[in-house]
Image (tube, rainbow, N blue to C red):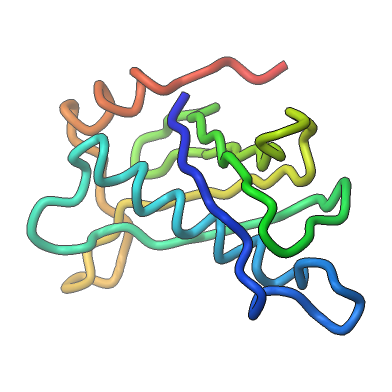
Amino acid sequence: MHEHEVTVRFCETDLLGHVNNNNFFVYMEDSRIHFFDALGLVMEDWNFILASIKCDFLKQVYFKQTLIIKSLVTKIGNSSFHLEQQMVEQDSGEIVAKGSSVIVHFDFEKQKSAPLSEDMKRKLESYQFAAN
């Protein structure tokens, strides 16, 4: 499981004092980029697109709280993979949000999906967890 730490900034909160829901998608994106970097999936050009994304908000999060975003691969296809992300409050260990996304390896020149290489699949498998 890949982990990335995020501390909530004041500008990410709304008039109710908690993190605005849009920011959870930013946290997920930030963590995905670190995940891709840790796996060495993006070398020279960015060749992945986000095909689908969803987030369930379980608890409110506030300014200065630290979240650990835990990312794991649940499915690897021919040209895409599914990524699950849990956002956990560092101090309490409580899951505050759960996200999932489908990421496609994409050929921008041909404007269509491209097969994942065997090397990419092997790297993704190192973070794979079978979903129930």
